Amino acid sequence: MTEEEKAIQFQQRIDAGEKIEPRDWMPDDYKQTLFRQISQHAHSEIIGMQPEGNWLLRAPSLRAKKILMAKIQDEAGHGLYLYSAAETFGIDRTEMIAMLHSGKAKYSSIFNYPALTWADMGAIGWLVDGAAIVNQTMLAKCSYGPYARAMVRICKEEGFHQRQGYEIIANMSAGTREQKEMAQDALNRWWEPSLMMFGPHDADSPHTHNSMKWKIKVESNDTLRQRFIDRTVEQAHHIGLTIPDKNLKYNKETMHWETSPINWDEFWNVVKGNGPCNHQRLNHHKKYHQEGQWVRDCARAFEEKLKSESAAIKSN
Amino acid sequence: MNTKEALINYSLRLADNSMIAAQRLAEWNSCGPYLEEDIALSNMALDFFGQAETMYEYAAQLSNNNSTADMLAFRRNERQYLNCLLVEQPNGDFAFTMMKQFLYSAFAKYLYEALSASNDETLKGFAERSLKEVKYHFRHSSEWLIRFGNGTEESLTRAQYALDELWRYTDDLFCMNQIDEELISTGISVSSDTIAAKWNFTVKETLQAANLIIPEKFNVIKGGYNGIHSEHLGHLLCEMQYLQRAYPDAKW
Ligand SMILES: [Fe+2]
Ligand SMILES: [Fe+2]
Image 1 (tube, rainbow over the protein chains, first blue to last red):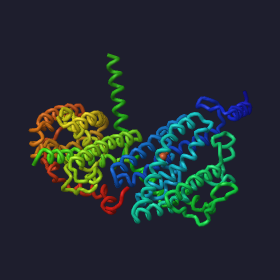
Image 2: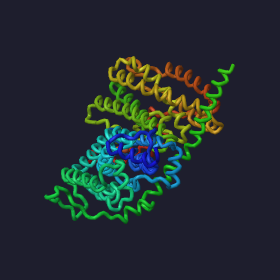
Image 3: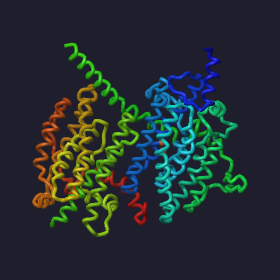
Image 4: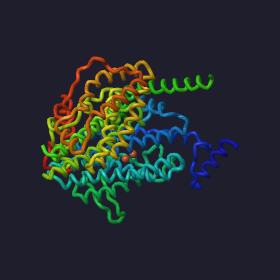
């Protein structure tokens, strides 16, 4: 079969809704797009542990501490599944971490904003995990089997993440004046960045066309963003918080909430590395990766000793 | 001191040990040498937070003065905390943390084993449930010590340094005061002497397998169960209790 015929057959499988598995033939672009996306998704889960980790030691109750700890631990687990899914393309985790450190691989820009108060633990769970659910529910239908399956597992946990965040922010909104102020302030700061999580408008999104054709994505950025907005506006109103957008209005005909244009200059600026925490997040990851080097060396040396000892016993 | 007062104090001691150990482990979040180890460390922290919660709840219930588990954890100061000195020591590197975890979990293992025969139903239940957890902590940390001792020169040096530094806090684990006297005489708790003997045997066995040498000269530091701590505890509490102290009227 020629490459061209393979490509046609591949597209037919995609159109028929079949899942593509690691051993199957696939176009190079499909491979590259998915590897980039899955490895960056994995890095996002791991870098995402940092803003929440910033409040773990200061969590205000035993219950809050346990929930936040379990949530961050879930994110580490998501990172693990996703690194494994990305490894199906023959590149291992160590190499992916090197790509993260060199700047070749990115992670979600949302984690380049600082988590300033405890209310941010609410806002992150509610908005960031809330946006992630919308995106990941769609990705669970993705054409690449290992990614789709990782998303199914992950989505189950994201529901809990979103609820715990909303609970924090709802409790604070119903709390003392200071708590209420913190809750509103957190929403003010996280609202627009969370809308940006869905990526540029479809017309400006370089990968959208191929991703849709290959069913890596089955819905567009703008459709997903609108779904998130409609959900979140209602949730904010329900607990007496104000969406920080003067132009917010409900369109009765479309039955959607309309918002102001998004500041895409800000988005691209953070993507390029100039957000308030880009430097800090990456440095943290590098620092602890380096500090762990002797532990990994020790574990490897020990494994090798065991192997050579057991080989010596066998040869005796 | 009556038995009930002693039991409250003892429950707080157990709770504080777990709470401070958990808080220290939580400091490893996103700082571990492997992702898998990050997950393991947070699992152990979660075990300890759970243990602390159970014992704070019991202490609050016994006190019947409207105190709650959260108040006991977040509103007592450094002289009121009753944990052993070992768990409050700063984490240091991964070898240091694993050494701390090893020395403490070996102790907790024998303590909980003994308390599983307590005639206080709550303590008994707590000890039985928590025993499984600390047995895993013990296994996990022993395995690392053996790797350190048989891995590279650097890992051996780091582990030996950790042992040299931390050994001075191990006598404190087995200290007894009037609380223990009261509770031993009523069959609620147990003498540390038998626990210490078992601990010594197990710890020496693992350290030997890890090529580590117990320091000959060290200054013994004690006092945790009487609320006499190292300077480190105050800083830990400062961070941990920040929101509860800054917004005393808030519910979270
Ligand atoms: Fe996640
Ligand atoms: Fe999440």
